[in-house]
Amino acid sequence: MAIELRVPTILRTYTGGAKAVNGDGTNLAEFIDNIDGAHPGLKERIVEGEPEELRRFVNVYVNDEDVRFTGGLKTEIKDGDVVVVLPAVAGG
Image 1: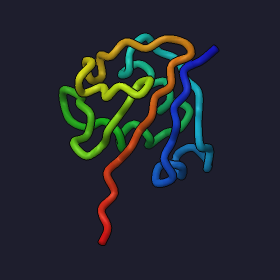
Image 2 (image 1 turned 180 degrees about the vertical axis):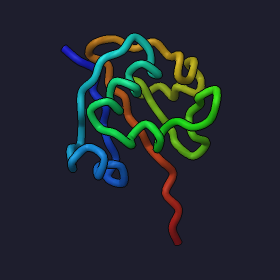
Image 3 (image 1 turned 30 degrees about the vertical axis):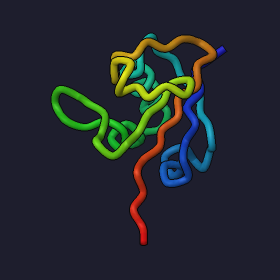
């Protein structure tokens, strides 16, 4: 079993159009690094800065819990978890 990343339409150019991809890691930071290895460029749309932090206008959820309240990139994850990335999209 793996950890699933559900990819929003705006980021699917980095996953070859896939709506979901699988990866490994013990925390969110490791998972994002693992996913970026297979889908280069995805990480820089989710994470920024030194030290690395989630981008301000990107919401990330692990099993429907906002990671900003569960430890951010240090949020522990395990096989079977589902990670959802929701970048803010402006329009009008």
